[in-house]
Image (cartoon, rainbow, N blue to C red; front, side, top):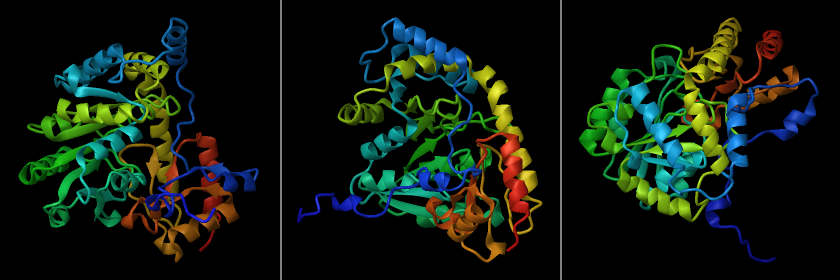
Length: 383
């Protein structure tokens, strides 16, 4: 063919993190710390509940807005956990929170509208914004400031075209969790400039200091917050592909129309699994999330003893984001050296934004024994 039939907007490089299958195949003893997929299988009670419901006939197209029973369960859990009423028409079920964020961007952005993200940020945000016709504006946070969000830098980035701020709490890749004062600052700025907050809150059970509070629950923020929740990480259900969007009905109506032309509805069986998961949410946290907390604390202790690395200790998620400046290598060179010399696979920091450079991400999605292997090998390296 003489013509390039690929759309111009897709002819550039990829959109973010992918599984490095070539690297995994290169060494038989590789320790893979690169992908944020929980290593525990979904709890058996959740699987059995979905199986029973599938046999009972829940294998067809469902309500495009979401299974009515799941929506009821979401509202009930929200009200119990956060002491805030959540009307049913403020909930839309999506086939993953990744799709949910894309739907949100398509719904609110006109060509050239700007969305502020705090770097380091989840690698897909930029693509989600740009595919919707928007402009991704990178506001840096720095390791030497414990990844605090600077109000001064935030205000300096706002222009007449700014439409929204994406706020990820706790964050992928740094593991930072933000306190009430930070959320109050964001709320104050959002109200002053009449902005929306797209709140990516998919690691809400992975909080290791205090309790999680959604930014939507702050006074006056429900009307200007689009909240993205997910069953993937909180309930060890990454393969089920089901998420929840919480927002004003005017936003959800548009997202539902867009969603209808893409996937129509979230998988019916996955939604039935979600009902059981919400009923078990406290048990899931006690049974599984504590294991990730132990891994995070163990890994942070090991990293702090490796002289060529630096670390801001995480407050949530199951990620760590060490710095490699002392090695004299950039993040991609370091990751290549780590793979070839120690057979440890991690994710380079550059795809996570400007201040992701010279860092790498570790996903603690393997057991303590494998983490020990990885850090034992890393301790033997010299740079």
